[in-house]
Length: 97
Image (cartoon, rainbow, N blue to C red; front, side):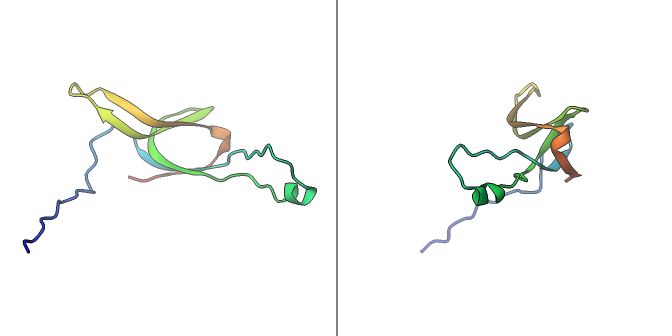
């Protein structure tokens, strides 16, 4: 039986982007439209999501992240998986690069 040739996967290269890669820990609302007892209502807690991606912009109102992108032949970047988080909800932001 002939040996199968494995494809080499390159995981350490990232195309040069003018954006830092970050991990954002933040607080989000939680809602439920169903019926609940007082005990079930008391157990309701806020959500603590984590997002990782490239930081597109940050100002006093919000931060904007993207997790995927495409670069055209002329160098134009198209952004995907975009997220905008109110700055007041961000608990911690860590640079990953």
